[in-house]
Image 1: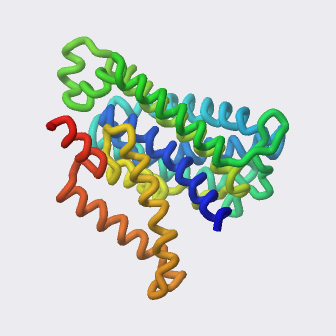
Image 2: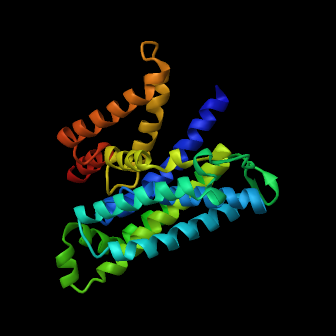
Length: 291
């Protein structure tokens, strides 16, 4: 049971990184993307290859994975950032579909449908360590960086773009640069989470980085509360704990847990949009500010 809970906590921390970084783009900058799993996958494959080919050093894997995901996000996002709103969502959807095909077919790097197996456990300075402390440390650093950025001029610029992009442009804000940096920060964080995921699972394949995964990460942000620091973490814990809870219900067959899980996600998001559109933490934060 302890090993199971440790595994669940490590995954919650990893997906907390994913949700928190996506929230920088969605919640603070108003850039809605359904391709966050693409950069999660890039980081996972990069981290896995470093561990398999070079050394299973977690710090090196996270650094390289974050750099690759961040740089590629700029190369791919800059043209797409010329469009707004639903057009950017469509562009990110196209990117997600292309990346899924690439991950499936680039067998020399990704292992194709079969994926990469036998990934070594993470090491730091030659000593094997657990994934949980690494994931918690990375999550803490990302939350601190996010809080610092959002309290400064960059955060105010992102919120002005989210609320009224044309007005922000009229006030002399460099909208394209701010949006590009927000996307790069979010995707670099997704790459770090991907490297941790590969080292933790010791196996990766394309099924972990498809459209369903991107939608799940988006659901974590929306359910927890966009534009809040802790909201995405709450969403990640809830949506990761849900399958574990459903698996213990005797009246749900094991083969149907996935389908029931998707139905609960959809129902939860629908009810939240009706009754708590700011999300769980978003509504609490609003209440405190009004008090």
